Image (tube, rainbow, N blue to C red):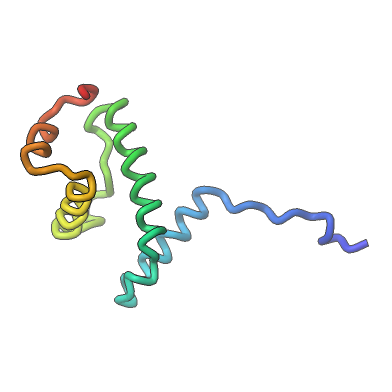
Length: 106
């Protein structure tokens, strides 16, 4: 009897999958090929990250850092924020109202 026939492949952990995505993204940026990450994959990751970040902020307040200090540039931050503002069909007036909104108020 083949020993491998009875063994199941172990499903990678979520932290391993996250690390793999991050490594692929870093590699794509280093090579200058951001399109190596599909738009669909990026949308799925951003959607999940935005939803969990918003839920944590609603629960814990503004003490949740969206990323480590110095890990993204101001340009990268603004480009991403503007893309999300457009995708959510918001305008700067909407953003201004939410910007100073205390956590927990909908």
